[in-house]
Amino acid sequence: MGRVEAGGQNISEREKRPDSHRVKTRLPRPADLTTYSVIFDLSEREKKQSDAAHMKGHIPDAVVRLLEHAGENEVAEILQKSERVVGIGSQSSLTGGATPAVERTVVLDMSLHKEILNLTDHFVTVQSGISLHELNEVLGQKGLWYPPVPTFDGATVGGVINTNAAGANTFKYGQTRTWVEGLTAVLANGEILDIQRGQCIAHPPDATHAASYFELEHPNGAIQTIPVPTYTMPDVSKISAGYFAKPDMDLIDLFIGSEGTLGVITKATLRVIPKPLTSWALIPCESQKQALALTKQLRDASMQTWQSHDVQGIDISAIEYIDNHSLQLVREAGKKTPEGANDVLIVQMEMTPQQTEHATDDLMQTFDTDAPDVPITRFANILSEHGLLEHGQLGIAMPKDVGLIEQFTALREAVPEVVNKINGERHVQKIAGDFIVPFDHLEKLLDNLASVFSYQNFEYAIWGHISDGNMHPNILVHSEQEARLAKAVMQNVGKNEVILMGGSPLAEHGVGRNPVKQSFLGDLYGEEGVNQMRVVKKALDPENKLAPGNLFAEK
Picture (tube, one colour):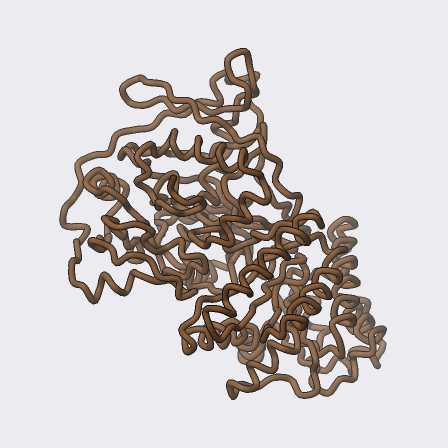
């Protein structure tokens, strides 16, 4: 029990290893030509032209699909033979990051590259094309779990590492970054880089380097310097906003969140933990204010539990929020929602097997009896304080209630599904924010969003990971003219409100090729910060071969 802190583990070994800022690359072995196929069929190439946000790119020149037993050597050969390469997994990107930005691009399809190479009680090593759903299915058979899974668990390991993805339970478990212990990446020149966390730590500035730096030692003996950007990243629980930067950072963290622009990740070693027992609650709220007040009390109780190690304390891993506009869209799509609810919270609470024995599906029964002082009783007490315990649509699911849990998750997933379907039917681009602010500023952000959207008479929906302060406001437009105004409004909120609140307008989906998100990158770090990213990119990919157009437009 206890929160897993977000951010990289900065392990200094400089006194023991003066060259701990340097790592060697290696040459690939000859590729096995039978382990990948090259597809030129137009219909297959057109399928790789857009992502989950319906953001279209160029039709690729070819689709190269890795087959079973393919690996880093085959990827190296493909990179050496290609002018431009975009690596993809499930293409669930919401930023255009998994689509070709320019002509003469090859799409490298890694969705079949999904072997589990090694599994212990603490670590799993996998190929990067395995989906998180497939991974946790296998881990579950061993009683294990990989926690930082986004809402869409069809995303691949390579995809979530490339975006430093996060999901509902970031509140307790942090982002992807914290859970990655090792990577194998093929660089743009075809050389292979193996990195273990703690192996390569940035050297501090010295007489010849104005900023911290890493060094790559190539097989021919040449030493290459990789500078660390000097901008300061917002201090929030999740962020996916360009290259990670910190003076004493770990080299592995430069690749996590780099959106495929620095190397093609072929293999990863991830930390895993014993799978906890999780109960779920669907809580209809009368208002946004009530939802925020309840969330704050549950957050505070959980953080107190983690600090005190109270075995009977409330241990919340995630709280999701769905506003009344989102619920209305779901109802209009013919899907079931709680009756009489203006807003909804979906709560995940971890318990021990012994604690679940005292729990019932009827919290009123738990509250009315002399139940032991266990988490579910404390949870019922808090709901009672907010006048929510007697709500007829309150839903409680114990870990064994798989069907009911699936109903709760179906409601959560229905909101983005309905919004994406509407955008597709209207043939318009998704206009959405991925905003995170410190929790104390969240009420102000939500009020401001509702005010400006209503003033512009926009059709909108807001949902997100309320326990993190991470919201996804969506504006549903009807025309290109309305889309232009909506983009400007969303950009203004991100720049002039979210950043000024100490937050980030780029929380968990990355930047990709989305022009608004790319402008947010400049708003966060300034032109100088973006130029520092370009220097890193040029050092590792001088010909701009890997995912061109991602993070920043080509100059």
